[in-house]
Length: 281
Image (cartoon, rainbow, N blue to C red; front, side, top):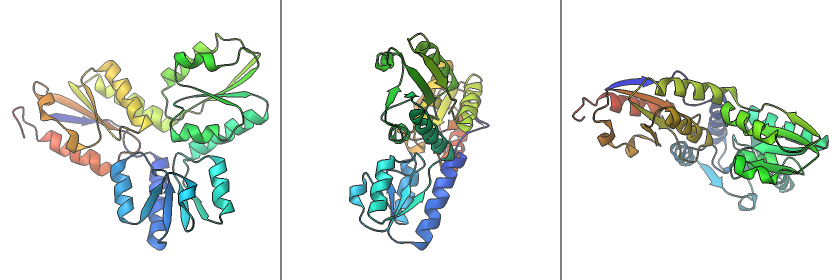
């Protein structure tokens, strides 16, 4: 089996930074918590848990020690609660997510109704919503009814959305009534490069594999885009989920991975996939 790996895939700088910070803290401290999974990859979370990182769902679960703010950021009121408790905070929020939070806050202060294009249940978006007093989150055209019929709209986007989706939603929003529309591009270039690289590759292969957590927004977006151009696209978390039956009749396989997928998962998958000779391993 010929295997081609996408030119751009795997850990992004923001994820690398968050993991590096976590490892650094764990090397010198014993009581370390992460407010939510540090990244959306269970293999990485489990590995860090073995070295002492405790993942919690709320600030109420923490009474002492150090709390790591994950790459997706945190709601400002939760950070304030931690400070009130006197708990040490280490911020590993991605710089692009930080920028998105700041922009949302500034738009809100300037009197704009903040509109976030993205998934309202994603932790990055929840954190952004917490940075402004008046926010509407729209995932697709079905949510357009949430928009006000008039006034000033300040539009931003979840960092891992695709430019295609961002553009389509801006076009749809533009058909609604408003007095002023301010759009700021908050898309992540790393995510955009991975999307472009994955789409280019999936058009050239018989079968495409997208590696990463099912909870990872950027990985799901990669799989969604590849599926659009290659119906034989499969989103797997790791090699354990692989089914060799889908390979029969295929000569060339493409592999990409989300920004929170570690290199060792990619390497293991590519190595095992390359051992397929058409009849088995």
